[in-house]
Image (cartoon, rainbow, N blue to C red; front, side, top):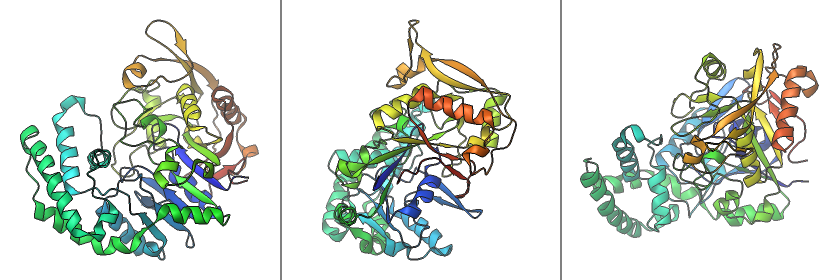
Length: 432
């Protein structure tokens, strides 16, 4: 029996992790975000009501559940407090009392955002496709050991010293490299003072709290952001995010031992999408791709950016299964495939030298040279929307799912057939 479950995206993000975390949270007492920033939008639909979360873990709608933000997250205080205010206005109880933030989590400040946007603007047609929210520069500060961290808010003299030193570096880049305006010290300190009082009560020793919960036999969920193929080390570099998106990152990002991570649930769309720049072997530029985008409402929940759509890429998923140790998969948006005469699965690639591979290579240059090898299957005309039983699925939909299992080498534990919490098929419970 798995006491704790890690939920990660196994494609290029936007797989529907939020809904599944919310669904599983009924069985847990705590949900932990362990990496990423407020560039991750997780959409929950409960009884037809939509909630979009960016930083707060997707278990917050469960009234008696604790939520944690680990040190692997870079935290935008303005985004966090705005999200809290939205939840309070929606009547979600005791949000600030149930939310605990690691004192070691780095803060995203105005100078991070300014530099992120200036850099992206200066790249012209070579843009990476960042959200411009300061995520990358905040992670740079963390690695360079100059970050202002949540726990620093307890000592404002130390904060002022760090900010002053950081601005000397950031303003030099903004003004001299990018021709942008300098950031004033007083403006940054005023920004920090505007949120400090509300953040302080939420600071906690997150690793100790999670360890104690685990010792008491309580169940925990670890919620990843973005997707495996955007991982800073193993994704399509440099078209990646700035953190590790793998299941193993939950250990470092939450501050828990690896032994506490017993089950890895990989969230996978029934087709493939990508947002922003970077190679995408199975991308469709025809009416089929446009149809998937329209039926799947493929627009970013945070940015509104349109997502690129393509056929299911089993070779890419095999890489995710390998480096995450995925125990089981949850296939989402199966209903978006309804009504198609035929469906295709990419089972491997032909490489520029004529050889073939059945697994995604590392790095953007290598992936851009991949030509997909497809297997074609009959589609289904019946509706799968809202179906809650595997047996009730059309025969061809079940054949499609079984073929995904065979090619990828991992079992399907769950299937999502709609955005609502209840529109879910359970095959094998991750906590069972």
